[in-house]
Length: 146
Image 1 (cartoon, rainbow, N blue to C red):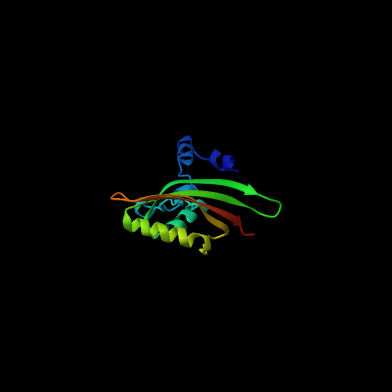
Image 2 (tube, rainbow, N blue to C red):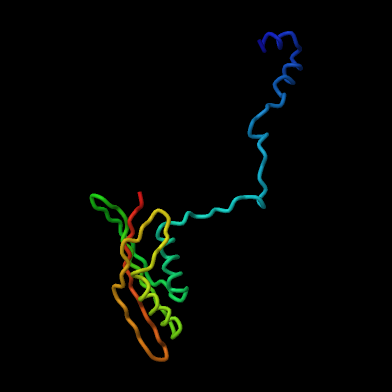
């Protein structure tokens, strides 16, 4: 049909027919300025949430030295085993470490989608003196809530 309508025109008209602007959907899409661009925010993992909860229990006075995570499952449950090592530097931090040791086994954690089935202290290295330091290793067993 286009060829029939173009066949009645002069060759110069044919050139103008082919140079007509082409409408594209991408050209109509609004562009976002860089001031309104969304920032990438990584998703918080269960490990991130556990470290935050443990740090809160330690009253922010402990520094994480290590955190190891292992998946496990049984016939009825699945979850993860976490081993965290935290250092408490100084006398005030040492008191926070002692409170952490006392409170951990009975603490009620609130981690979405997880139940803390067991929380124990595996090892404590406490050095007294001018440079008091306490290193605590805790093991937490998390079960996935279904």
